[in-house]
Amino acid sequence: MVKIVFILSFMSLWVCAEELDVQEQSVEQNCLHCHQQQQIPSNLIYKRYLMKYSTDKRMEKAIFSYLKHPDKVHSIMPSAFFSKFPMKKSTTMDDRRLYKYIENYLKIFDIKKKLVLEK
Image 1 (tube, one colour):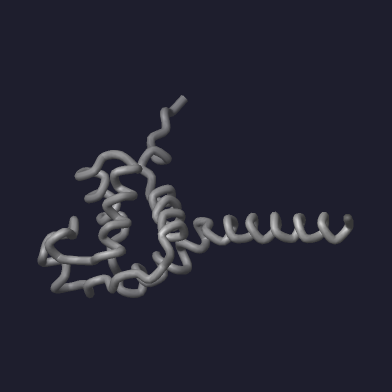
Image 2 (cartoon, rainbow, N blue to C red; image 1 turned 180 degrees about the vertical axis):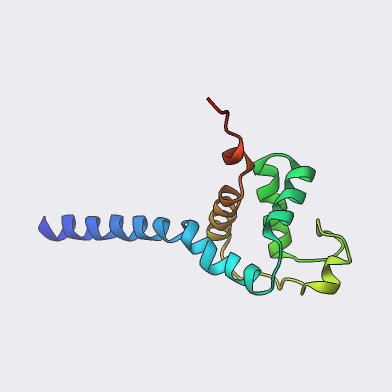
């Protein structure tokens, strides 16, 4: 009985640890770090996605699609952008984790956090 409880608790901790791995800090380390090194304007990219797709779910799908199959034709950025910045290579990350990263990326740049009514 003790072994079963131990195994179940270990498995639940493992699942929770995997979920905690994909936090804003992970996005900053794994995504934004390269953006900063290459001086890619993440705010500009977010604004372009927001203007074209307008909702988080539509932006998630578009970003996911681009990261899985990067292509200048389907990019939201103008062609001049790619003369200054390199084309993203196709990601090998599993879909579930990639969606979590995209979700947290969008939370970091969420414009709604900046909309505050003064009292």
